[in-house]
Structure formats: C-alpha cells, structure tokens
Length: 355
Image (cartoon, rainbow, N blue to C red; front, side, top):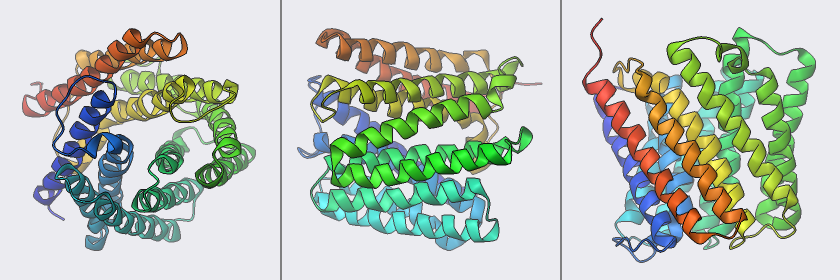
C-alpha cells in the first residue's frame, strides 16, 4: 500500500493518543474539557487499544505486505474516532474487536511463514487486543486493563526477540523466554476473570521477563556505542527497569485494584515507563519504515526521554508517598514528555540534518 494511505491511519492513531492523554489528565482533576462525557473513562482503551492498536497493526500490515491486513489499523483508528466523537462505547469497542482479530490473523500468517519464537510472541500479543476490546464492549472497562498490558508487553518482547539474532540466546534461554510468555498470557486471561490471583501471576511473569530481557538484549552491549545506537539502548534499558519496578510494586501490594496507589504506580510504570520508553527508542527506526521519511539522529532526542522518566519517577513517588500534588505534577510532566517526543520527531523529519 502506498505511503500516502498510511498517513491518515497514523493521524487517527495519534488523535486517540492526544485525547487519551487529555482524558487521563481530566481524571486527575486538571479541568480539561472533553468532547464527550464518557471519554474520561476511556483513557485506557484510547491509549492501549485505539492508539497502540493502530500503530502496531499498521507496522504488522507493512511487514506482511498484504492489503487486507491494513483493515486492522483502519478498524482501530475508527474505534478511537468513534469514542472521541461520542459514539456509544460498545460501537467503538466492536470496531476494535474486528481490528484485533484481523491483527491476529496477520500475526498468525507471519508465524506460519516463519514459525519462530518471536513470531509466536507477536501472535500471543495480538490475541490480547480483541480480548480487551470485547471486555470494553461488554461494559467492563477495568477488566480490559490486563489485556492491553498483555498485548503491548508480548508484542514488544516478540520484537526484541526478533532483533536478538545479532546476539542469539541459547536454546535453553529461548525455552525459558517462551515459558515466561506463556505464563504471562495465562495470567492475563486469569486477571480478566479473577483479578487478585491473576494480577500476581502477571506481575511475577513481568518481573521474570524484565530480568530475561535485561540479561539477553543486545542493548546491554550497544549502550557503550555512540549516537542513535546508544540512544536506543538507553531507552530500552530504562524501560526494563520500569517493567521490573511495576512488577515489584504490584507483588508487594496487598490489594492490587483500581483506585489504590499501587495500581496507579504499577500501571504507569508499565505503560509509560516501559511501553512509551520502547516507543521513544524505536521511533527513529519504525517511522522511516512506515513513512519512508528520514529521521536523522540528534542529541536532543534524549530530551523527551529524560523528561518522561524523570516525571514518571515523580508521579510514582507521589503515589507511594500519598502526595497528590507530586503525583499530578508528574502526570503533567508525562504529557509534556510525549508532546516533546512528537515535536522532536516532526522537526527531525521536516528538517533533516545536512551531511
């Protein structure tokens, strides 16, 4: 498919990102006017389902190079736009269910072409997207949270495994990684049905996965390089730290449930500290592949990365120390970091550095 057709899909995805951030800030009492009264409750579905569902599905469609696979990011983008425009929650969720199953079909097609562990992880992750969307369609938005997490973490794990061919793990290490991913998928399903035991399994699997990735990822060597290579490695290793930190917070919490301080701290350690750090790290590679636009490395790529992790540490400290002002300041910093990231990528793409 021509690059020009991919741009509207990305625009739809980033609209979901923008309104998802606004919804999150509104929930913290920032007084942001939302176009729909139901939008504040859709912070998670907009971010984990509509935005990242669009971006990841588009990346998979480009990899598969099949026109039908582009229906997945289209459906995810439509879901986000439907919620933004005030359509019934179930309507957007049904569109996301459809997109999730198309993504799963694309992931399975890739796995059948190349039955490798990383493609199995990508298929595991894809299976979580329609599960989360189905929970939202059924009116149980909170139970969709483990599905969004499983979708994103398993997808990222699969992509990092794909790149591990440069420093391939041993067969025993691959078996261990496969076992961790299976436990994570099982825990995700259980957390949707029985939250307390399910979340403990998810957290234990995430802790194990963070240790495995930190030990086996090529980033632990490339952090000693320069330029873009070091920047990517720094983003990855910081992400693995937050993946482990969120897991430890969830495991230590006696009652890990919505509304608790540990819930907000762990979820944002995972979704912001891990997932968005991966997005910041991989964007200079993924965006050129999707849009065929050069994003030459600049030293100020580190600015949004530093702001993201600094503000996240502030937010989590506010959660754990019961200091709402600190938490809110950290949340505002998180939004600023994402805005800075978008602006730096736009500037790098529009004004490429001359050789």
